[in-house]
Image (tube, rainbow, N blue to C red; front, side, top):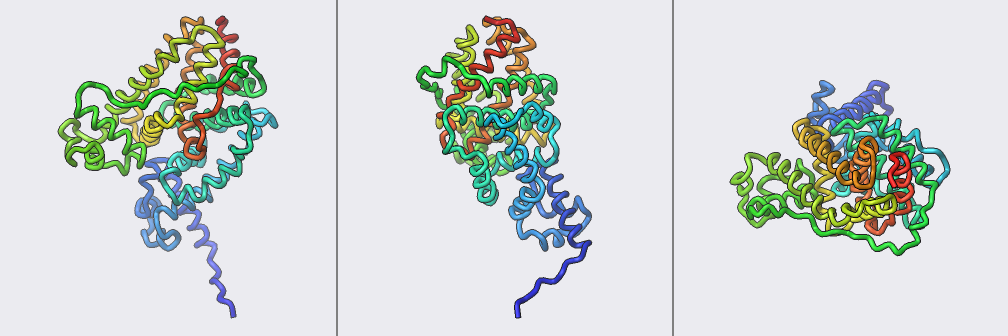
Length: 395
């Protein structure tokens, strides 16, 4: 006689849902890396045993939250993104779903961002992303459209978790992006040889500071801020376990210094490209190079480190304040960069917001796509920057 499982009460089934709801709230408030059985139990006012009886480990709980709470909303969003990229539907309504995103989508983007370093999540998420995107079957223009649209969609969520963007600016940006999806550029037939840039590393001249910043970039980008101990960062730099504290008061101080220094290094490395923004054709080409070089092997540690900084700042106001400051500085930089091309300040603000958001989304996508650094983004950026130039009256 087969063994039959005992029927569960309505109350027990309700408690299952309560546990998942509490776990989702924990992810939104403190982050996936700090999701724990005891914190979920405290949120519900129950014993930790009641949580363990449903999920054996925090990793199993995380998978359940993804499957039951985040996955439905994310799959629906990405299915629509694919349809827009393929020209099957209009996509201007996408921005309404990601500006002020639901908890399920906010947490869902974080699940996607950390899946590359969490095997339990990657095992369930990666195959579905591959099935949705069908990346290997796509042509060069199709890959550019899909990567750009996925990048901006996820990037808006990550950006706005840290710094509130202007919803009207996002709406205008999405409207222009959707137009660019259907447009073609006569200049895309030129050979595409992306300028991938150099490895981003600290060059302050302070040997200890440089060693710790470079080590922090690698360690935090690999395992996240929560799992990056000062001792591990010191050892990775070939120094003593306590070397961090000879230069910094805390791991957080090192993170903040690393963000500032490495961002300056990335800007410096980009200048030979960005200095060419003299007209709409060059602006489109420059934007394509900047997006493609971010996914290159040499700059991938910086891309991942920056992404982890945003994930941490999503749950910590002190870190978010630093990124807020850098966002403002970035907008000023875009104004200076685009002024010679005659771009108006309001339009430069739009370009700055998109320029800040899309690398974040592409950093997430890089965890699922092997050859992101080969994407010819000119298929999108050249018509898009043409529309931006038209809106600004630039040549």
